Image (cartoon, rainbow, N blue to C red):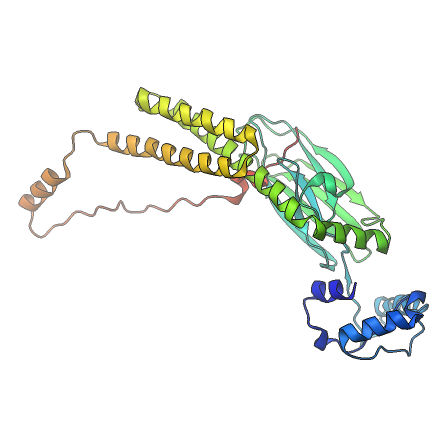
Length: 335
């Protein structure tokens, strides 16, 4: 617990001014010795271990009433709070040990075309997968107008007040429709249960990271396939049959890799598919000005004017910026 506390606070043991022991078990000489050895200094025995929490609560009450001015007690969230997103991933919004009150807003989107609703599954815990964390609540935001996936903008907000009450809202930025939920006992866990959840997360960190990477690769691959189908559908008259056949063949190979759950295979086939997709752009640009010979054009321009030069860059263009809300990781996975 001491090592974890120092890690969470992001400080060194040498930066600790006083060590105050809490709880009856800290009366044991072995406990006192272990703590003092870890911090390299003696503990403060001026406060009764059984009364420390009550004293802290009394000081906080004084701060809230304005009777105490020179002491600042900061409460923090004991565990990370987030929502479930595509593939069963737990996406954090408020990290563990964030000082409260606090507020965080992120924008998500839909995972399927014409998706009429999204389920907001509020989670608490340190694991990467939603099933491994504690469910705090669920609610549905419906009435989303039919549209392509990734287009709707669903703004999800987490707000924790000074009393630890969590307010979660989801708003469709297109229609203005909103749903909310209030969670009064945002923890509902004992100190031992919280510590156990943190310990479990650390013990399964490598395993969880592998699961998360696999799901992210699958999501990204699925997004590429969706983009490819859309490009072919919108530009079928401009693409050669052999190119379309090549893309579809590589797409089928990628789908097979996705079903295999082999991270390296999926990653390799996804990269190959991206390379093939680039040929669509090359093909379309090559057809944009058929029959044009750059060399002949340059000679003509030079003959017309020796002082006037033509810019190869079109004016008033802006580089397209990819919105984070279109990233698969940000898509919700419930209908």
